[in-house]
Image (tube, rainbow, N blue to C red; front, side, top):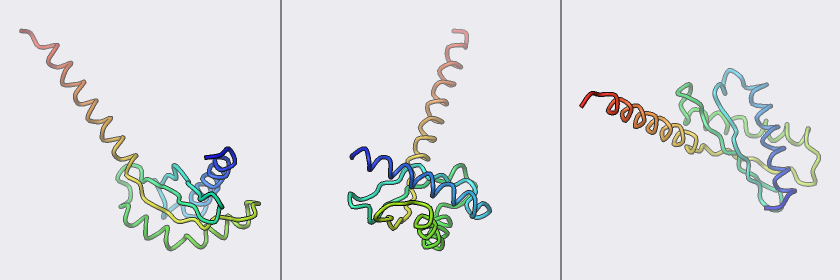
Length: 121
């Protein structure tokens, strides 16, 4: 991935996140856009999102983002100056959830080891 692609992806991520948190606060509480991947011709892009905590059911968020996708794409056309403004689609990614779960399991293992070490033999 070229330097330009990285810059465009970061710009898209920043603009999409700002729009969601500015205009969809009540509907999108706890949603984080953590990556955007665009095609090489910048005609389409995928925004990967995660839901922090158990605030909102991810399926509800997917329906919401489909409902507002056209609105978000219009915002990008107004605010970003590129030859091709990508048509953004959204995809829920459980990577953040898995990472959180792994950290929690590691914390549990560490706590259990400390309990075993502190017991008298």
